[in-house]
Amino acid sequence: MKVIKAKTAGFCFGVKRAVDTVYEQVDVCDGPIYTYGPIIDNEEVVKDLESKGVVVLRTEEELDNVENGTVIICSHGVEKRIYDKLEAKGLRVVDATCPFVKKIHNIVRKESAEGKYI
Image (cartoon, rainbow, N blue to C red; front, side, top):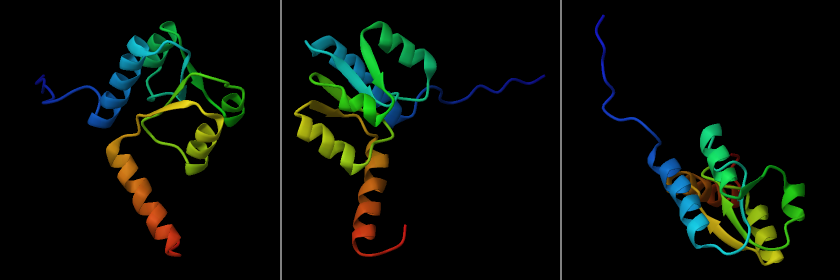
């Protein structure tokens, strides 16, 4: 049997950036830290972050109950209304959305605003 070793392994750029962002915030934040949605789709990483005190907000209703702290936007990004809600609540927001995903969100927002069907 021939074994072929992958040239690369691990997380993509956007996911690595998002995960690193949460770990950095764990080191510098004084108050509670939340992610809006799991930071990535990797149960082991999410469990490790939870062991460090990071709480995953899985629904908008859970977000409604947050009164203070830092909310980190997951690598997939969120809808504009979630950003608006976070701002209205006065929460500290750290956006860990993958830059490539954010670019697509911006294109969709622009095209939609021009009346195009997305």
